[in-house]
Length: 395
Image 1 (tube, rainbow, N blue to C red):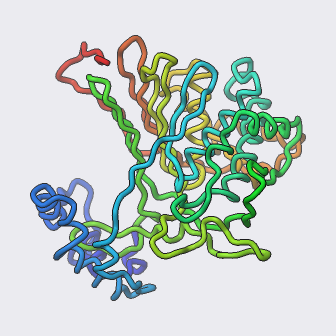
Image 2: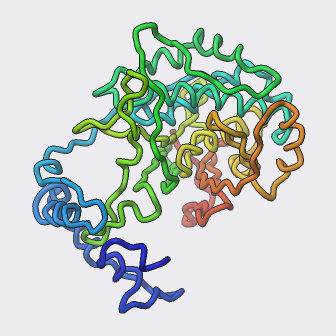
Image 3: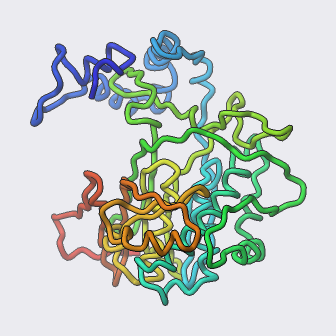
């Protein structure tokens, strides 16, 4: 941390009390946030979006030393969370479900799986050069469609159903050849004409996967965009910087961008919380990850690992990561994938060896027992209820 880059004195004081960095082992208490939680417990969500907390948020935003905003108490009071139906696709013998738009991640992960269903992935080993090639090509195609069509469906017509249509995916799968090729967006419908998105996405996201002994499950991804969000702190919490998830350009070459900024609009995201179900509707896997737009590839790779390669959730999480956002093929630095870089280069890939800091969390169900998996690349861990070591889930 560098106190010089913090834009607000309050955030400086939180991490640098009395001008000194918090020492390891210090018990850090956040009384303002604790008090706000108590108010929400008593008064409901109005304690957050209205009243004293709302006034403090508006004041902090309007008086920020960096890029002060125009947030008003009326804006906060008018905000309503929305519940949207999940999007799902059949993959092999399973039903895979994820987050609907304005998240682009759910649709893109499902589209990648649909494309890979046309390849015999189970016949290939996890770190096999051909498997990585097919995976990156499916990712290219999904990202091309994502950048063109994904936005807030309350403002923009998003062809979610058409993008996941089996016939459309089958036609797109034919584009996967033996050589690396840039992908262009398809035409799932003939009446939409958008320009490709150019949002500036950052990988500061959190994810948690939970399943309890009764079979209740949660796959939840959240983000404040950048490690310290907007660097504006109020009542012990940091305000997000999600506006950077909107396209930087509202229009290109005479065409509107689906994810352009509009008042009251929710920005596109790459969040990809996923649940996988058996044919009988029982739960098989819960998974998700932080990682900016690379989340899409991180999550899809774990689903392929569990379903196609019969790996445990932890084994699939431990696999070397690879991504391709329709630009270049990244291979995780210091892993076995480095050895196949020359083979991918021969296929035409622009290969870059990078640190790929996924943060995957998963819970899988096998024989009515729960098995957790946490990404060794970050500080997350898998925990179980130690009070009942023999517990089985009851659906």
